[in-house]
Length: 350
Image (cartoon, rainbow, N blue to C red; front, side, top):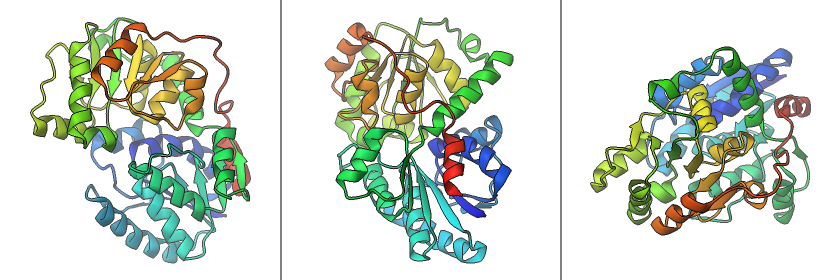
């Protein structure tokens, strides 16, 4: 069986690290990097650190407006699908690469498998929401991380080809933790950090970075926190902060994005995480680190209902209050599978 896998952004590299490792033991994979994330900090470091096979094709699309970027991907992916004649196209998550891959495959009548199907924020202002809804409705095999995702799909009339496999990011986290036990990361030492003596913050979603009001309130909250804050800054966020003339106090440790192993080490050592990242919400939960989500809603509702995640939006006072008072309550049940989602994914591909 020949599977054409499409990745293009940081979260997809992480997910593909788990699936490709299993997939290549049984089938032929043609790995396509759209180039949506293209610099070393957002792309190359992940291929190296997670031992992802080098792409068979790199479309080098780069950044740009949603329409132009998706159109360029769609044209190039259609040509690749016609050349490679895969038995299946595998897409991940909710980026423009996901949308373009699902569209290109469906128009060529090639079955589409969607890893992380069924997530919903019910916020159509998010580009990711449009991408995931369209991809799900075009997919033949919908690989869900939870029963909540299955119910979301059923509410839209999608019941065929739907399976709960868990979350492949847990597979990668477990793989990474094993390696960190053998070869610990030195990032805390290099930044002069002590465990549980700092907060870890990330901001990258368009709803926060493209809205100056929200971004300024988030930065104001970070500036007002009396604890040490480590802030790996996404390139888009750095540009927005600079363009808006926002001041980040000098005591905040603003650093470039780091590799996955370093990010796991930073998360595991933090007292608390502040983020708008879906992946980091889950990783914080699995690592038993309290999380404050800088959004008004989340797709990962179980982390909230189980008491380890709280939604603070972008309001300065709400973020500050949550940082000062939030503490997980109740038990810590297993969420999103048992760390064998990649094997289940490949089993269902055939």
